[in-house]
Length: 303
Image (cartoon, rainbow, N blue to C red; front, side, top):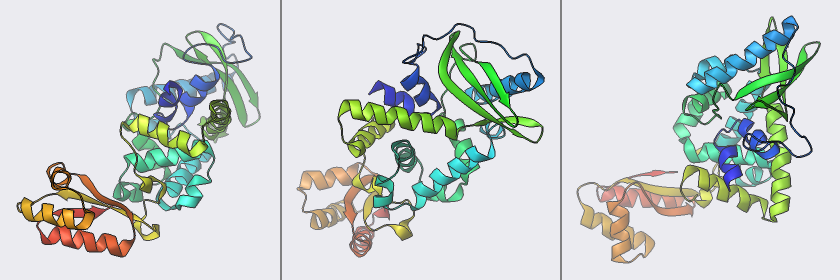
């Protein structure tokens, strides 16, 4: 599971591509890894190298706004797309996504509240990820860019890790007078690498995704993780008790009536908020349960 721990925490899938294709500072399959790749010599090459270094420094220091200004429009559109999928995609639509997008969408749903996600656009999502440490951090001394090739308004360069030139190709686009990173290219590399890993493991794809996202967030995932964060588009809901209030005995009885749980289990739910009272139930049943809990002094919400 280590490779996915590295992969999903960044969420840009940058480190996924590094760890899956070139290992943790080692060499990727099919490439011996040349030491000290060719440094930039042209003005464009130097500008691209400077943009890469500035992006890496911004990520390393958690400066999300600065990092967001160093990625291209396609990258912002990518984050807008995964934000929209996390908020609106149905369970069937989510399960049909490419595995890299699926991992990203479920990770967002597991870590970002519906209200916070609704308030974010693609750039805001990326900024939040950098600021909260989702995006891969490596020591500035260990990462570099070499073998830069410029073709009009597009360019590529190979990532150097611990003085080893890796097979991982970074892409850049010229935007006005500036060069910016193209992160969807890394997501595509991650997609291919993940598919190969799943095939070699022989594990069903959705099981693979759920297990690894759960490992990253440090808790089991409820079935509703497949549902959109947009409550207006959900078919089933979880009812979460957020506060037990002052009439705990009556609340425990309301929990027992709704769930048929033994007294000890119902009391544990009341004592350990936030707690999931029922999950994957229709809206009318969820609303009725919330009303019953609130009638006994509790506070509950739909998730």
